[in-house]
Amino acid sequence: MERSVEQILRKYLIMGSQNCVGNPLAILEAAAKAGITAFQFREKGAGSLTGNAKLHLGKQLRNICRVYDIPFIVNDDIELVDPLEADGIHVGQEDQSVAELSRRYPEKIIGLSVSNWNEVTNSPISLVDYIGAGPIFATDTKTDAKSAVGLDWIKALREHFPELPIVGIGGINPGNSASVIQAGADGVSFISAVTKASDIDGAVHAL
Image (cartoon, rainbow, N blue to C red; front, side, top):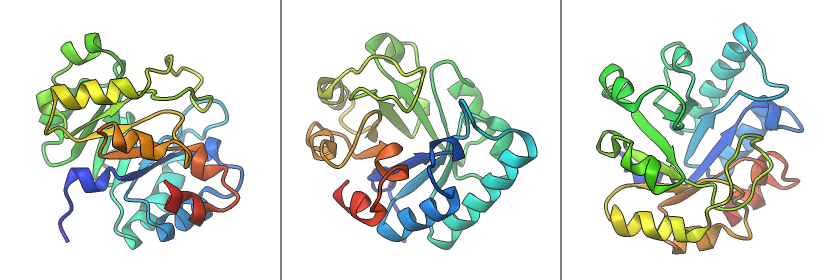
């Protein structure tokens, strides 16, 4: 079944080994069984793997996504796109240029994070397949995260871009995810809500 980008974004797990209390492969498999709709491999920050260890983990996670037919997206590391046969790449404002990515990977899903109108104005929004809006709520998962922008940011983006797929990013958990969808997002992305959950199946269903 061909899925739209909006459907892919509905329950979007972002994860690297540094986010996991247990085995990242077991966590992804449990989340895949529970119904996540996309996975982003984000192996960066304190305690993360590098080099061949990072690539090896990426391949293992990629295989799980294949088994469950879940789109596999790489976070900003362009060198991993080809060896991991990624379905897409997600970048922030300081990462690889979207224009370059769209030239290099015309068939892949390209996502871009935006947290204010200045970033929107200076970004080639027409070249991306979706935008990640946030951080919606305060988060301690990313040490370099910006200040929370709130649900109004989702509402403003949806008003400005009625057709553009939007996923909420930052501090999203089972208790607040519904409010992000109600504000106009097509989906929610999350890290610790699943990677640190005692009941992954329950957490994914609640998101």
